[in-house]
Length: 437
Image 1: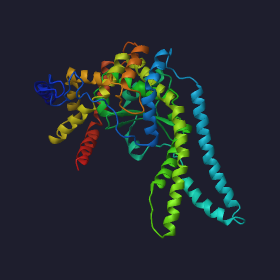
Image 2 (image 1 turned 180 degrees about the vertical axis):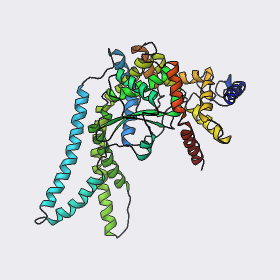
Image 3 (image 1 turned 90 degrees about the vertical axis):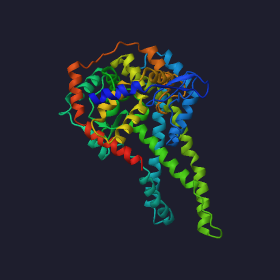
Image 4 (image 1 turned 45 degrees about the vertical axis):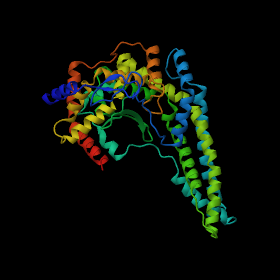
């Protein structure tokens, strides 16, 4: 631990001051943390700049329009527990319509093949259409080979599984089929395979710096996603969403192709087909918009409910503390950079814990102010962090530790996780070096 203590002392002694370029006030600066000023300079709200898909793009714009109204709705609700709603029914109807259209297209192609003797042209067209339908079919989400390797067995990790199982039982959800541990500064819940088995993923860098209450709040939040009835996590609805995305991507991308070959019949036909496909692409685009409007409210409410269940397990302060730690990814990134550039000697996770413990109060104040900014969110699928904290404080002023790790259990958990620290450390070093070239 002498190295870690030295790191902490070095961080504390490196505090300096600099002048704010906006209001010219002198502010405290730290070489390992972002400089900022009370006037608002350099607070930097967290938001992703580019939406990765048509669904995410529409989802983000919708959130900007109706986020405040949703917050008001959350505050007047007596509780955030799931229940059947008209919106959920409409979502199921929408998914059924989409699956019915896909099935109808397959049946139509099969019918065309069945009458190939009378109408050979239809049969010729039906074959490539069937191939296209097959290639664009929605895949049932499964764990990849790498993800399967990240599943830690129950026998060497009894404390971790017992902790997660206890929280799942407390919140009335079946036990996890497996727990994955990876090198990301994040955590997630997912269901995979035809049987929709439940899996919890814990990023070791994040999980290792959390307090016991924050660890409980994190797992409680992810368990909440397993019981809150979020339509986007339902296999029937999820495959309908993927179907729409596949068809829009296919039609829109082909419609954007420009094949201009003067005097070439093939080029002319290709241009006409491209324009027709672009025109047809508005149909899945319209369905996507309708779908998003139908799932948005319930999906955002599911996030608020997951926060509430996390607070129910780890306490309100544990849930809010978790939110603050989620915004500490910069500390994780910089500590990894320093570790690799120094030769990657020693235990990175000891250094990360020391770096997290040495975060100055001014950095946490910056994070608190960032959280209060309306546009600040860790992910476009989540409500703004300010709204989430406000809802937590309104609904869940709960004492910490509905489920607590004893001192001995916490030591045992640390011993279990230490077994895979070397493996995760190697991945983090390799990732950093690959990103440099």
